Length: 100
Image 1 (tube, rainbow, N blue to C red):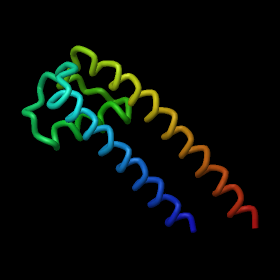
Image 2 (image 1 turned 135 degrees about the horizontal axis):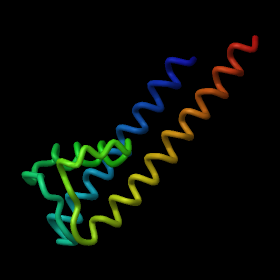
Image 3 (image 1 turned 90 degrees about the vertical axis):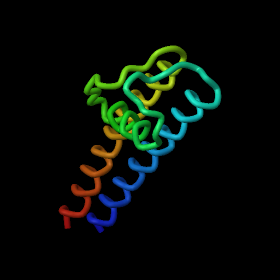
Image 4 (image 1 turned 180 degrees about the vertical axis):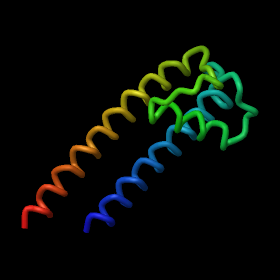
């Protein structure tokens, strides 16, 4: 049960990162709302940037400019909240499972 839950949470975080990655593609390439320096306009660059922002690691090798900064700050807040929620949920599940 615990492994299924952990894999489900991991999958949910990866999907969220990819959704934001596509959001950066749309924001920069189609809507021209700003730019992210250090990207070569490849999808994986945007997904990498998204993963760095989502996990609040922020290596600093890619820097947002323009209105994309709002999407970046929203993703950082959402990632922090969802990762924290996942840790709390995991703790509660472990507590419930190991109680028996």
